[in-house]
Length: 117
Image (cartoon, rainbow, N blue to C red; front, side, top):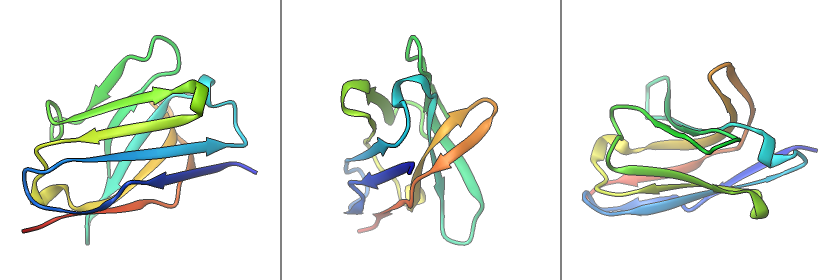
């Protein structure tokens, strides 16, 4: 059974930081491109960031570039998203998913990030 389990969400003040984690099981994690996707209240899905399986090139949406950093630890089957300088508009449920350029396959259940004073 494939599982992607996110953690690390919570309530943070504007300007604060959080680190999200996504632990994968049931797949050969190292061969998958991986992405973070978010959904703000009342809005559709927004791709946030991706990291590929090979040379681990990273990609970011303009809305988070320079503030978020994606990384992975293949030995731990874990994907990370370091979020800094958080804004109220970053409030969303954050999902990790396999895939990037050609669509997404497996999804986690999501973790809530709320940025509020």
